[in-house]
Amino acid sequence: MAVGKIWGEIVRDIADSAVVPFSVTDMAEYMNVSWHQVRQDILAENTTETPYDFGPEIDFDGMNLAIGEFEKSAQAFDDDAKQAATDGRQKSDLLMRQLNDKLIKLDRMFVLPEGLPGRPLYRHVLHAPSKSNAYGGASFPGIVDCVASVLQARKKNDQSEELKWLNELKLHSTKVIQLIDRAARFLSPTFSGLYQSP
Image (tube, rainbow, N blue to C red; front, side, top):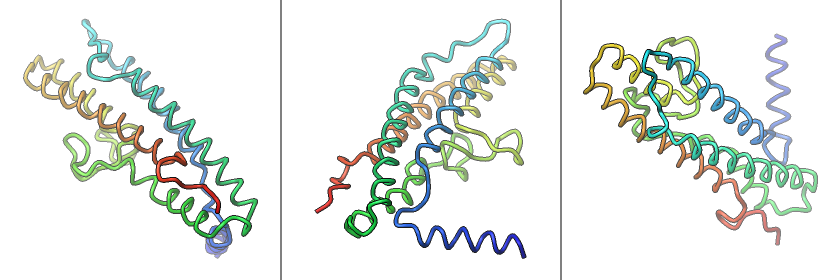
């Protein structure tokens, strides 16, 4: 009964809000923290006798740059959304609709139609169930899975499998960077001329 009341209040709050109460800045922070954790995990797992330098396959600088741009766009978007919400009906209904549509569609920007490498049923590049633990989630799951597959092939001394997963890692990490960059541009006001009140 209490849970039902809580959900009822949440739904009412969302319905009464001029702009959907969702913080894109929190999403950007999650992305940044998760990426740094994934990067640390990659370095920690890569402790074989001859560690592999994933620099050529994963553009660490490009990923950091894309996430940084997403953080800037997210902060600017949240500032605009808060301003629009406080201005209320003084802003146009069209502006409110545009902001809400962007919030609702944002998560779709991180979906790969072909799915994650080796797992076509999972398509979200920021979070999905872990390949090694179906009960636990993984951040940047495609990159984590590819790195694990490379290291596993390396332990087995299977060079063809290692090369396959290195190529998959390079392709997938490039796609992730492009999706993050696309999402940052999607949030910006100049992407489609939004946020301009009449």
